[in-house]
Amino acid sequence: MADYQEYRRRILRKRWRRTFAVAGLLVLLILLSAVGLLWKHLHREQSPAAVQGPTIFQQELQSSEWNTISYTPARRLTVQTTSAGSTAMDFRLAALDRTTAVDRSYFANVCFLGDSLTQGMQIYSTGLPEASFCAYKGIGPNAVVNSTTCTRRDGVQEIPMEVLTAQQPKVLYILLGTNVLNRDGDYSSFLTYYRLMLDMIAQALPNTQIYVQSITPVRPEVRASHPGLYKERLCEINDELSAIALEKGCAFLNLWEALADENGDLKAEYAQNDGYHVKPEGYTAWVDYLRTHTINPGVTSAAA
Image 1: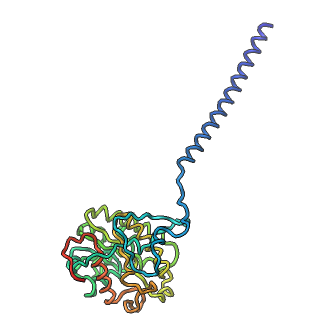
Image 2: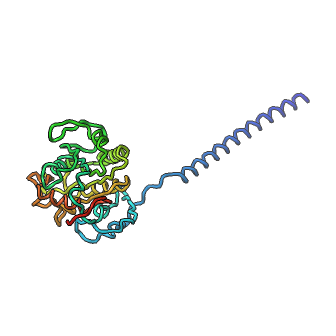
Image 3: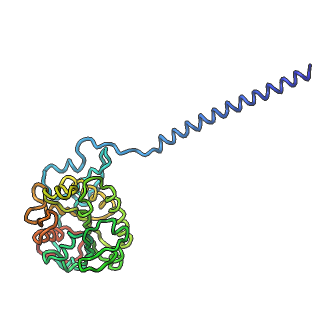
């Protein structure tokens, strides 16, 4: 009988130990779940709140003019995002303010990276043929990032990044986008390549002042043959480019101030027959704008 009682006590002790073990395991799992939920709550990424009402830039921009609005250069520009994830920056306000005009000789020490629009700067005497050029018809930022072999207007083939790295210019002006944005639709890959390109250039040219130029305006009729080239879309893309330029420490230039009419279209007197390339008269206005929008030129200023 005593043996039976001892056996029964051992069985009960084993059952209690199993019960306590299971209960302890359940408590541990509950505690771990609670800790996990608390950590996730404390460390989750806050999604940008939708912009309610006018942004800081829209509040300051009350007119419909396409000219750059003056602002104090020391003021920090905060980039807001909309509920759709796009930037709430206005490229007209992000652009450099007007400065004292520099002499054309200033551009003998700079380089221009761009497409056929930049080639016009090289071709016409009203442009800046005395500057250095990495200008290739039809290219976009992806060609620079991917080290694509590009063809100059004289037929010479070269890789843009290799040329820029060898030159190490003091100043670099960039204008890319018109040729690769002629189809309507998503342009996020264009912006991604643009960011990568600026990172690559900044690393290869650590002592170079970089200017990002806005995509130029076009005539309204261009949309019929190039569905992606129309005012509203180009403004959206320029908003994004201006935010990227500031993000990467580059200066942003609003070419619409020089080339657009009161409606935001490329001025008729500046437009070639295709509606988006620029006549020599347009390059005169373009150069005048560049001369009066510089950062620490380090040269003697001249009368405009």
